[in-house]
Image (tube, rainbow, N blue to C red; front, side):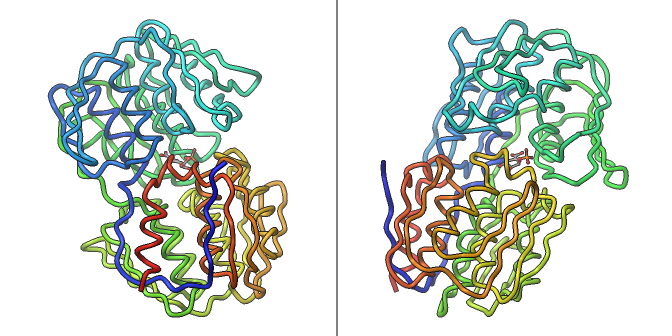
Amino acid sequence: MSRLTVAGPVPLRGRVRVPGDKSISHRALLLAGLARGTSRVTGLSGGQDVAHTRAAVAALGARVDEDGPGTVTVTGATPVAPAAVVDVGNSGTGLRLLMGVCAGVAGTTRFDGDASLRRRPMDRVAVPLRRMGATVEGDGDTCRAPLSVAGGALRGIDYELPVPSAQVKGAVLLAGLAADGETVVRERLVTRAHTEELLADFGADVEVDAGERLVRLRPGPLTATDVSVPGDPSQAAFWLVAASIVPGSDVTVEQVYLGPARNGFLDVLQRMGADLEVDRGTGDVRARHAALVGTDVAPEEIPGLVDEVPALAVAAAFAEGSTRFLGAGELRVKESDRIATVASELGALGARVEPSSDALVVVGGGGLRPGVVDSHGDHRIAMAGAVAAVAADGATTIEGWDVVATSYPGFEDDLAALTRS
Ligand code: S3P
């Protein structure tokens, strides 16, 4: 098993560009694969998750050509169910969105992934897709991978998301592209808007009613377009937290996506007293070290920062007072059970973390001591461990470090560059 050892404390200084946003990368590839004509996608995430989706788009019949690092051209085609099993690796987003696409494809598409992926519930996508007319078969009562989707004639539905999930919203809308009649997705809590934003860019007949919290889609063809993928805010969060907690730090993350339902972590950090400068024109976000205080993160904030909780929990360990993440039960079904893994791994570094069924409380004030962190096969736990390591006084090792390649293969290089001076 691979490991990373970091000797802290070490300030972070300089400018960094994080990988292209993972959520946008998946969707840009999928929509380009369905569109008429050739789309050019630049700034794609270089992580393995997106590489799996790219291979799946090609397996479904689109032509995908590499045109330099992070750049591909995709020529869309009517998708055809591939004979071989589609391997999505570690990517729940990839699988859920692909299930939506394949619900509209005649024939049976089979999917599988790694051990973490095989534990994740897919019934949240299977239920609406079945209601639209697809046949979805998976393992156990939560329809886990390996699973199959037999698609074909679909009908549009009016669906209220039972869990706040942009992945489910995306899957239903992608299926809706091939359905007979209109598809409406309603959400009680606002989730990230990439599917509807990109559908509009690809010329779909899509309408967003922000007041009613619904997206309405009428089926129809997509037209190829070029997509420039901005930096991933969920990756930026690691550097911004690291800079906030290590004295002497001053980091600017360049060209970060600052659209809806992705930047809740910036609000939380600001409430905690972080010294942030956000340039809405360029997307550059600068963080300097500051004294932090604990805060409450409300349930309705969770969907807008769901991936940033491991990083924020590290910040919370360095804050005065407690930080409570409330209504955070969705964290239990991510790449690991993040309520359990944040508690155990920050606990291993001396933090006082109190997990409950759907909340996580970090009792701050004590900082962190060096130690050993286990990634539990979860890239965000590994990277949160690295952020803890740069702040702790001594050498900290993250076991199972290689999983970081699923979303941020260059993390170690960027860490070295930011800690060089
Ligand atoms: C994602 C949505 C989130 C997030 C995941 C990516 C997406 O999941 O955790 O990393 O691209 O739609 P849920 O919307 O299922 O919470």
